[in-house]
Amino acid sequence: MSSDVATEVKRRRTFAIISHPDAGKSTMTEALALHARMISEAGAIHGKAGRKSTVSDWMEMEKARGISVSSTALQFNYLAEHSEPGIPSVINLVDTPGHADFSEDTYRVLTAVDAAVMLIDAAKGLEPQTLKLFQVCRHRGIPVITVINKWDRPGQTPLELIDEISERIGLTPTPLFFPVGIAGDFRGLLDRRTGEYVHFTRTAGGAKIAPEEIMSADDAAAREGDEWTAAVEESELLSEMGQDHDQEMFLAGQTSPMIFASAMLNFGVRQLLEVLVELAPPPAGRVDIEGNERPVTDPFSAVVFKVQAGMDSSHRDRLAYMRIVSGEFERGMVVTHAQTGKPFATKYAQAVFGRDRSTVDTAYPGDVVGLVNATALAPGDTLFDGPKVQFPPIPSFAPEHFSTLRATTADKYKQFRKAMDQLDSEGVVQVLRNDTRGDMSPVLAAVGPMQFEVVTARMKAEFNVDTIIEPLGYTLARRTDAESAPELDRQRGVEVFTRTDGAVLALFSDKWRLQYIEKEHPDLTLQPLVAAAD
Image (cartoon, rainbow, N blue to C red; front, side, top):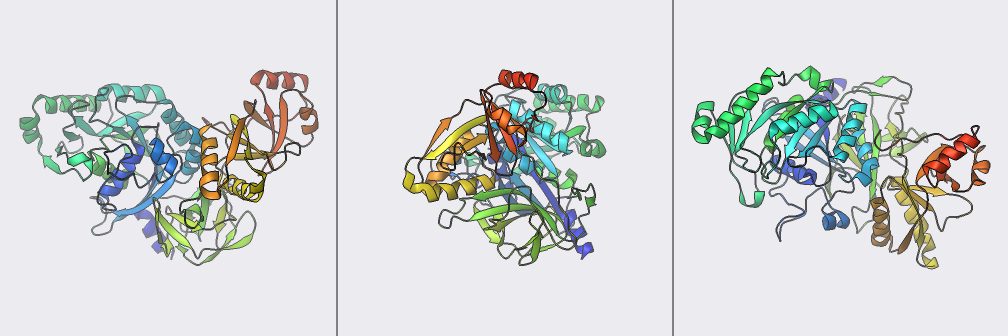
């Protein structure tokens, strides 16, 4: 069976799209699905009346605001030019929240992928959230493909964008496809490796795949004139500077293949898929908590990286996304939950395409599989078959916003508790409790305030519980212990809580209060938590 697993692994590419809000991430996700023939027409959140919402954004809050606030998984086959004849590649695309308030969810996704597509707005260049997410990729050793999106709109010059990336994050872009026509006048792409010209033709509203015409350099020069000449000259300049693709440097995280595109017009989307299949690494082994690597051909193992409920309003089910690390998964197999040692049945295993699902009978390393009604699972949990293995947990980020949550009426107590337990286990927010405040008024801790909006919206939509959020006057948290807790509780501007995972956290009104207590009580345990930008 190991030979079958190895063969299947070679076919797979698992990646995430990372970007700043409004860089076109969900539109690109939709465009990729369109080119893979998984959908017949692309939708757009901010499109014309009558156009559909994107497949990957299904929460009402996402549709209303035009942003992604939860991660979703899409799997599809794609027969690339570089695939073996007649054997399509299997693409696992994990869409991520773009908004900085949901950095923790994005971080979980980045533990489950082998490559990332960094989407950059041609006009805005590198933005803060993109920088943070790139640093996470660098820390985890995830190779990055860069896409300059929205080239159909006015923006910076290609060389300005290339220089900005090189200077600000130390990653050397190596464009594979260079734009013909300035930003706002997107005519086509120069394939730098073949010297050919890919000319695109617009479709009505960008809803269909844009027709392509491949032309020789001479024909391109005759058609595009000075625009083609300018593209060739800048491409040659990049070659002189050594900015041609090198696979080893890409996998080492030193360089980034680059493509210029317009997700809204479906220009450059096929090229991105081809580059992913050709250059992105297939799934590899993962290091367990003992420091040993689990090869992809070992018996089945997987890591849960996301738990999501509320995707089906008629059933209120709960879906745990697991990334398969090793071996072959077969629906119905009984595996072991490493954290509890208990058996876990996998009868209800599904592939996910946005909000739509289909039953999965078999899956392989790199695949993302949804387990329905997996109430015992939480992000970071390990499932395995055969000899025990457990992978390192996914760290929780240091919260920066704190609020109390309570139901508006006392008669909803049971629903309130059930909803809090569910949202807590999903990792939507961190839930903190102490004896003083009790269960009716837990403290929610979040990386960003929009997480609180998700909580109140889902409380109402899924449990019919109206709630009130009341901000607390704390700005930072530190991990402490039971021995330090009594003294900390006596301090002004400090309150001690226990998080659901058992961690004891001390909340402080501001950094000066923290500094004062550290100075006056150096014997107390006060450890920093993982920051969202780390």
